[in-house]
Image (cartoon, rainbow, N blue to C red; front, side, top):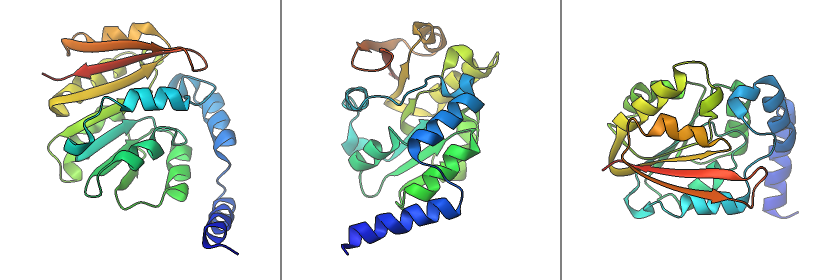
Length: 206
């Protein structure tokens, strides 16, 4: 039996033993348990992912942070592009998603934390960094509890390096209201090849 098949089989057995479901089941469970935090009932399309990440300067990225990784739709493509000596920190308040990612991603560059994105300053400092190069987010800012979205946007701007960017994909254009108080340089596009069509934002720290 090929090594890749053995590895996949062992991974599935480990997931079952740990009570970890398939990605589709995990996504639906996360949506129905915490709909205001997941924000969509389907994962982002690969076209959306590629379009979002194409603007990243991967040669000058040592720390990438992702808010709300879910089942890893963005996480795995980020790791494929990330330099061997860089790190990816993913942050999610849903412990089920964090447990799933820890059981399905085996990469020394990968750190998965059951935390709030509003604590980003402390989180990156705890891991030996004073700034992040890029931060991506699929969090539904418009449905977060009052004050949380603004706190996350403010903290995110503070920890980004100069010329770094906050990459935000949303289904509600009101997310711009959380970005404009902190960023002057914001690019915006719409990805129609997604369910539902998504708003894409790149907020650059100049």
